[in-house]
Length: 411
Image (cartoon, rainbow, N blue to C red; front, side, top):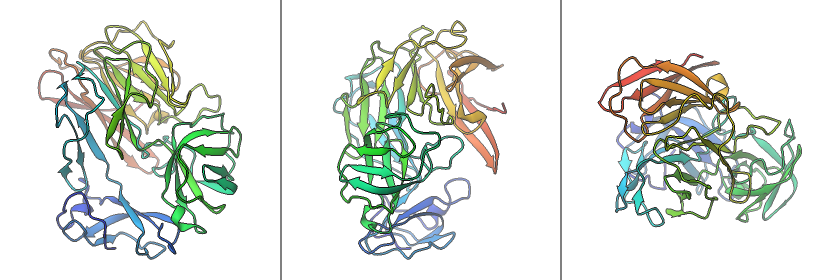
């Protein structure tokens, strides 16, 4: 396959065939040209020529021959980096993994004049799915449309079991994955403004379709992939719109109380769907910090701009307070995708918070002292996956020093 739309930077020979573990990056081909296939398929890249428009060799043939005008995406991800301190050009950039390149200076208008002493970013990636689904399947699996779509709606034909709650996935997105009758509808993404309840809901999108999907369309419900949320020591939720390269504080509602040192936020995307609605994929939990034991809840779907619930009740609330040095990492694969692992105040104590059942649990103890507590994220997860075996590893960079510790989170 030959790329005609240029990559953000030139790649070397076979650079796209190794994402760092000997496996190539995933290429998504979207048959959206007029007269195209109307299908979306993904393959691994096993070889490539050099340059910005390389020829790619795939691990298996596509079921269709791409037409001129079809589009593609390399599912490698980007790392966004925000520096602390006084606002200045270059404080906000991204690193593109596949092409091993940095962006130029990204927009900073509408960010606070000083990025607070502690903050937490939450990416609403469409690659984030529940623990029992694969990336690309969204939160509900691949759904089929039926007749009745308009310029701003799509009617779900595949029954959701159990039935959806009203607006359970408001402010998420719909992505059209197949439309053999109207190929030019494939690949469209639209934010969900509202949807009805029940097994076959009607989905209303915030912006009209460029091409209205047909009754043969298939689609998925995913995170709004165009958004990154920043939570700071202010009440506002700062929202970065990736396509527009802009920040605003109007997309989502402000909290009643600001965060403090030790703030950390996590999206509960890894849990299984709870038919009761007590736990939802739309929930973002905010450990408020500031030497308090408070956890707030922001529901992305709770209203047009989301809804806050301050100081929620949770199990073992008296276990600890959260302050400088607190940070976390979410395991969305093992243990039902429930656990947010926490370094408590930069000490040797670690805990984990159950994102489904709202219980804070003592977890483990690091025998090596961490030194003076510092603000910022110092935890990360990696995973070993072999069929149904999913083994997460938590990696912890100590607060004052250069040592990195790892532990297998077996249960």
